Amino acid sequence: MARYPFPLWLKASRPFSFTASATPILLGTALAFYQTGSIDIFMFLAALFGGIFLHAGTNLISDYFDYTKGVDREETYGGSRILVEKTMLPKDVLIGGIVAFAAAFLIGVYLVIITGWPIVVFGLAGIAGGYFYTAGPVGYKYRALGEFLVFALMGPLMVWGAHFVQVGQLQWMVQVGDLHIAPLLISLPVGILVAAILFANNLRDIEDDTKSGYSTQASLLGRKNARVAYAALLFSAYLVLGGLVAFKMMPIWALLPFISIPAALKVNKVIQESLKHERGHLAMVDVMTAQLHFQFGILLTAGIVIGYWV
Image 1 (tube, rainbow, N blue to C red):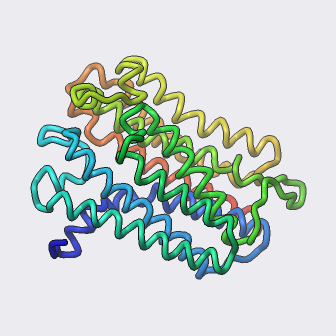
Image 2: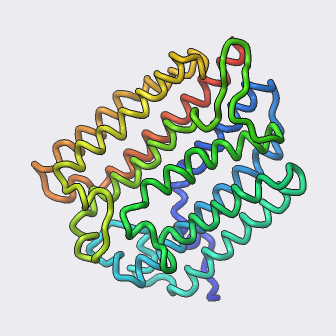
Image 3: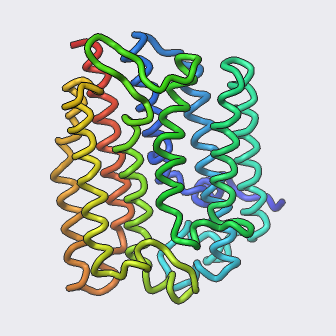
């Protein structure tokens, strides 16, 4: 494995995207705090870094297979562009991804020792999901399944896993005061928005993906219908959140993410007006959606913590 400076490895792992994995872990930890009134900082950090290593490994493996399969090219927008610009060797990026997964695995071993066997399921699902996102005969990214798997892995899986790490048991629902907390249901809004990040990326890249010979939800829908689907994804997160509060599954302070609606309207406007502009108009829609996801998640986490105190 060639020696590369750390900043180059950092660029290859796409750290700007790590908010998508940090957010559900913060949310799951906040739910545990609302339930118990305390958190184990060390366990939180273990879960956080485990999730980030899983995400980094997925990004590196994805870069490798996207490049070797001809998906990432000089004229495309995707990936870290490390391989397109030939600043690293493909085999080294692949090895880097495996090393990141190994780091996540070692953190998982520690968590298993402390919390028990259920974390094995979370960890193995995360590693398998991250690796087969682009690898092997599965490559579900290329089979229009990316949004579904990303939703599951970076929504319910990470939120429920982070909650489990704190409380030490798998809980479908627990009563706290007059609320009925259900980690899996509460994970839905952030899961929907993380799927929207990938959908925005795929909507932008419809022509490139079609040229490469693989399908995404956006390419199957076509650019016009994909714009409607994106708006539905975006605003369903707010509808689900409102429903959870209305049915007393979250405190009223959990409505704080509604502050982010102007940001949602802004990125949605860019998407809806895309037919009037050149392709470059959508260059940053995935980043804008990721920023919205993080803003939504931080506000939701803060709302739950505030709800404990108020």
